[in-house]
Image (tube, rainbow, N blue to C red):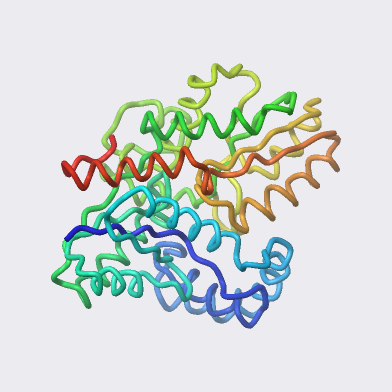
Length: 343
């Protein structure tokens, strides 16, 4: 029997330092998130970061927490429930980090008689710290605890024509009553070394301004290329003015070069260059979360206005929108009927 496993990032169980700390520990101790030797990662995370970060992060979570719980969890649950209504296959939701574990979701599917699973990492783009770690963790759980289950993984769908259409419709709706001067596509940031580590050729990804435009097998796992590709495809779909659109990367840690340009720097640059009305979209996420709701929708607006901007909107992620739900159900049902996966 076939079934579906949706996997998103995860969240603390609550917006307190006590609840945030174990979540951050699991997240930051992932070797695909902080990719240094385990002894050094342990020193950095448990010896330094976790001494102060939980309290700071808890304050940020408290600003965006809903009565029902974590926005990311609530949105993901609503999305999963709506998709379930449009497919006959058993469906479970798991999180890469936190108490809603992938193991629990696999167990749930097994108990329903499932022995063949479509794994859906809820990330449009391939990155070792998001898409890849979901796949690796799921396979580890499968091999250790559910060897009888066969797993097929949905590919990164960043350039799928139907996904681009749905994303573009979301952006168009968000812009309906906002006369923008500029649209900023802000993607989750990752260290530059992650790009090079994910390069199967070990020589193509130079991050020099041209490698992402030069065709290569490296693009299948190049997060930077895929982000820029998404921006270009949406621009074409919506016929956006090239001069009014740009791409940036948010959420970086000090100490290493991360993908540029940095979103917070762009807020200041755009405002100082005369942009008064800014719209921001965050296409690295399909569900709104701490990074979109607090860092972009709240802090980003404050940064832009302080730098001289006048009006600012963050366009919500796809979340549980009907068109996104219908598209995911279509992909699942096509796989069920013919093993076909979106290209």
